[in-house]
Image 1 (tube, rainbow, N blue to C red):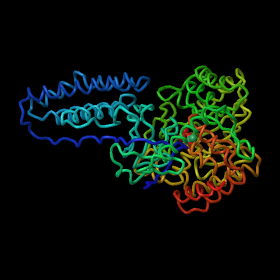
Image 2 (cartoon, helix red, strand yellow):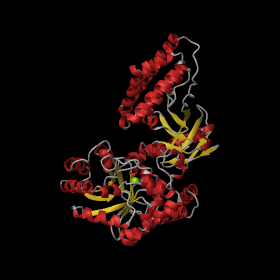
Image 3 (cartoon, rainbow, N blue to C red):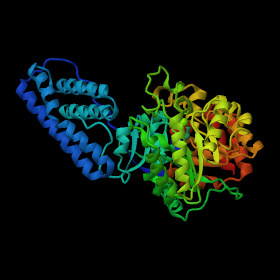
Image 4 (cartoon, rainbow, N blue to C red):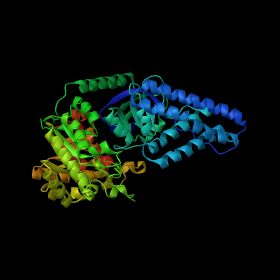
Length: 552
Ligand code: PEP
Ligand code: MG
């Protein structure tokens, strides 16, 4: 069976026919129309209403938040001011395609200038324009196909807007040509438990309707499978579904070593899902997510209420609350509104909090009050810590406010390298592998063009984690991981082998990580980690870990 390889996400397997994502139509040229403006007007009107109708219909079929996105897009296709802007260009003798392209681009630029929520809708406008242009040219609509039966989606990569619309009853698996283990598609696949393999360079060869098997444990797409191989894949899929539905157990290795599995949360709305999926507490509560659209610092009372909602869901369990992590990918205007050339290297995280100490003190006060009112075991930690002085200062301040357990995130190589000195000055460390990878590899986590460097499997990142794990063991203080790396089942085993005691992840990833941990003893996890550490590249680290793991 010919094989294409890539990076498997999770532990899923799926078999089915390929449906490819249709590419956007090429941008139309600025040329005079051969038709009269009236004839062009009729064509454009028809295309706009066809696109609006399709979007509404898909919205009704998909439901949920995706429905809101699709309905908003349908309204864009029928917006009277956009229709006027198109009409002006048609009257000037342009083609329908070009008039739509230019008028929508002009509106897009205006939305982008407005920024905020409207700025974020700009990409939706381009998507609508491309749909209308495709319809005018008689081409299939760009984006996620709808062949009317279950399929395996093959794409160059998925845009966030596409992912919101995936109908998970139909999409059995994802295969993308681009992307690494922390790409947007990989994160989404983990969050929604979709079988996926990303970075399959040869997936361009897969043809429409061809039968394939996607095995994310092996990171292999099998083409031309036999009937027996398809039956095997289906049996493995059913077994995994049964495993996911089995009674939830705490995270443990094969030898009984406990590895508590915790949830990453950004609001109280996902607490129920975390509890249902067996989270043994919260390893990262991203408090800044509650205030992303606030212009002013939230009051103590407002914060107390918000924190209490999350804490209440975990009586007797650990909840690690992160102090506001403002800056770069999570801007909070009330903490830092100065434009910076390199925001990821700027006044962010704990640096911004120290520069606005009252905001930090208010947050610690609110958290201490919420702790008083609930039964949760509250731990607090600081984001983006670079020096041991910062760690010491934060830990002392948290304790002055009545929070008994205070620690720091290890997201910057400088603090990982100083881990031994760090551990004597704080209560615990939680490794944020998303930022730690970004800073170790000097690769912006938001930039697709350097996504291949954003790989927590890189031995440079693993060596830093080993240093923190060793410092944790030497000082008998807890070390957790709360970045995306913890949600990658095999990497989770490596992390445990490097000395990490707890793993925190999006709740949907818990089942796969729980299942993988059960397959290895602590000694085996250490051997798997050792194999990864001695590799020269991220890909080799993964391969070496996999080959040792398959012997466990
Ligand atoms: C991280 O950097 O790994 C992390 C967990 O924090 P965030 O992704 O919120 O920056
Ligand atoms: Mg971070």
